Every structure is written in structure tokens, then in C-alpha cells.
Length: 110
Image 1: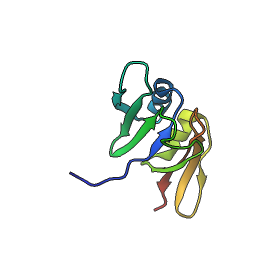
Image 2: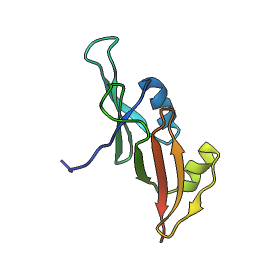
Image 3: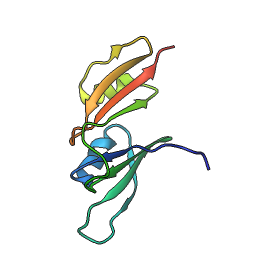
């Protein structure tokens, strides 16, 4: 097993959040609820990147910032209709998911 870190992001509606993250190229891996009608806890993945999306109050706070390194930030920027900007370390964009979580997404500078 490879060791890894998986950020947990608070979401109000896991199904809506999964649809939004699918636009970023993530796919739903699994979903857990202790019982029907209780909050959902979902894993989404894009390649080796993974995020947990939690409807559980207290698991995380909105306005969290997560940095994602991708091979082609311009493709992601085009999907969301935003313009990428060059920084000394990467070409980047910043997005907010429907729950206010911030995603800084970049392709490292060569």
C-alpha cells in the first residue's frame, strides 16, 4: 500500500458535489451512510488524487483550500470558463465548489 493523505471537504449535498467534481475529471469511488437518510461520506478520485466529501457536520469547514497538481490546467480552465495565470511555480486557476471549498489547480512550471 502507498501511503497518502486524503483531504476531507464538507459538502451539503454529496450527490451535487460529485456531479461538480466530475467536471474536474474525478469519479465517484464509493459512498457510505450509516443508515438510509443519514449524511453521506463519499470518495472521489482522479488518477492518484483522492478527496473525501462529507455531509457530516464537523468533519471539515467550508472555505478549505486544497491544491491539485494536474497535467493540463488549461483544459480544466476551459471546462470552467476561466483563464489560467502564470506564477513562478506553476500555471494556475482557482475555483470554488458549490459549498465554498477553494481549489487551486496548477500545472508545474518547467
